[in-house]
Length: 428
Ligand code: SDX
Image (cartoon, rainbow, N blue to C red; front, side, top):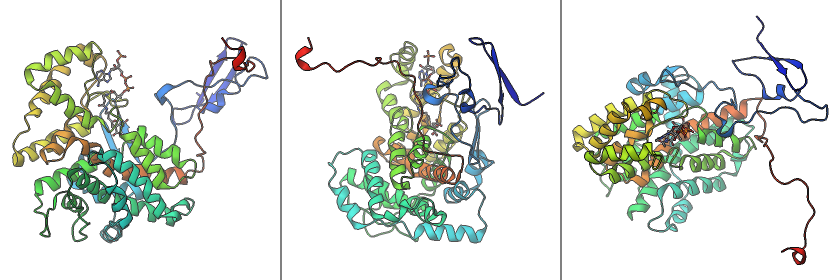
């Protein structure tokens, strides 16, 4: 049997042999299918790209039915258990686990770039006292592009690696500045004696010149959360990173766009929306009524459902276990009982079962961030920090992929046919 699709166009009786490669057909192979020779030819129509591959990638593999997630072939469960975020960042960007020497060089190069230009601080101070941290984060990442005009040399591999290192190093500093601004506290500078995640926690919470007393349970929990959020193949924000990168824009501008896409409550903003939802429900006794409102289509069960996972998001399982370790230190978050009851009912209810809706990465993560003392407005920012690594790995792969071109989808035009302009005097 040949690896082809035989298509018969019943409008003309013609048949076409379309090659099948990697279980896909090339959309451009459909353009030969026409009724008249002058026709444009067939396209596919796929709102939300539910069944369209935009690229070939070797970074992250997801099997939505089996609940499998692998970074460069390594199962997320093993990475969360045995690796560190800093090492996973190297794996995602470079494709292999680092040797000891490579790891030392990698961590040293990131430590060298954690500081941001003083003007960034002054720029951030201009935001309103109650500015949403994610709005500040998106704007400030874009502003970073003005400090590194050399980043426009996207065709230079060495330059790309420098910018990737700079951004991985600076995103936590910007995130901590956003938090400190929202709290009205002085900004903390990076402490390069600390590891990546420790340094971020210290910049968030240090209140004087004494070293911040890092709780091992918090450091471990946040490092695992960073690993789980680092990449997720062609999600909405990664697709935006690729779309902006496809025009040869610099990686700072592309990453600001990706962060903007992540901000949406249907995407990375869901972790903030989950906490708002749990607070709105308020009590376990109100859960059945809320579930009925979901089923009536009045509200969405935020933190549930996924375009790819039609089984339990493997990240949610790990986050749930991580939450227990944090609550041992902080005491149990009362909202957890509401979340557990929502999950219990939803996993039994036909509405959710039929639509294969399960908890996703955002359902439990916010409970941990809140237990650590962070406000819900910081939750999308906490998603953006690790995901910056995935965005940059995807961007780098795009730039190196000779098959990739500037992204410019087509449309189905259903508007007016040609008509002549009507001067105001002749209008009703
Ligand atoms: C992330 O893509 C990624 O990989 C994303 C991410 C990553 O790591 O990058 O995993 C991170 O964004 C996780 C998702 C976080 N978002 C939420 O938790 C928001 C709530 N979830 C949904 O809005 C929804 O499930 C999406 C956006 C996640 C997925 O949307 P789809 O695939 O377009 O599904 P859909 O909206 O077409 O829903 C299919 C059906 C619909 O019902 P019917 O019209 O068939 O009757 O399921 C229903 C929806 O109404 N549905 C829900 C629901 N999610 C889908 N009903 C109630 N509550 C929900 N959460």
